[in-house]
Image 1 (tube, rainbow, N blue to C red):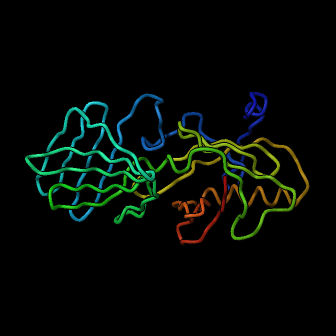
Image 2 (cartoon, rainbow, N blue to C red):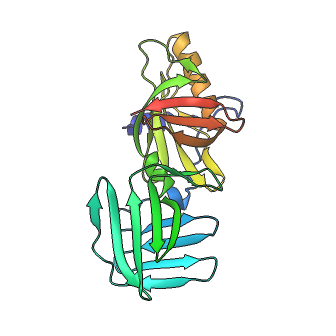
Image 3 (cartoon, one colour):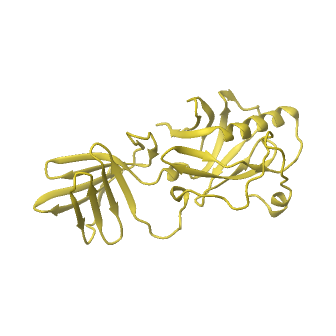
Length: 243
């Protein structure tokens, strides 16, 4: 955790420096906010466009072709092989919503979500993604590569994504803080703020490279092996991390 002493030591420096202070009021994307209260789960798909929301009281389905309905109360799901299945009857047709714990990429935006969703209504089958993308980022990560180069031996740069949209970690020498936002356009980091300790030059150089990389992040990908890739607008991996 960042101490109050460290936070007080943060200084504003020039825009050209990697050690830039974060704004005191962090602009947070709704996708990055977790209120801690019971929340609904949303899933959606494309071609045709559809949207489904599962709350504590109802399942609500809407499609671009005009088919809309609500199921209430919410049927008790069955779970097998990390797949939750809600089953009901709608207008005399069997209905199922399956939510698998498998990373799913939106077919239009490429944004990844933590669940793969399948909706079956009679003989109609729709596929899409469910859950909030921010859930894939949350937690503590160890940085393994920066710009395709392995980290300096013995160094331990880290990055933590908090539920409220904050980020913090160890840049290699100094602690840093900032925020992130997620939208249909991808992942963005705010300018980071950091403490001002001095370390050996290889660590200082690595920290500078890392914080500059944060400025250019455009999107993210979580691979099947669990590695997180922070990707720039030109498609290259800027930072590679593992929990």
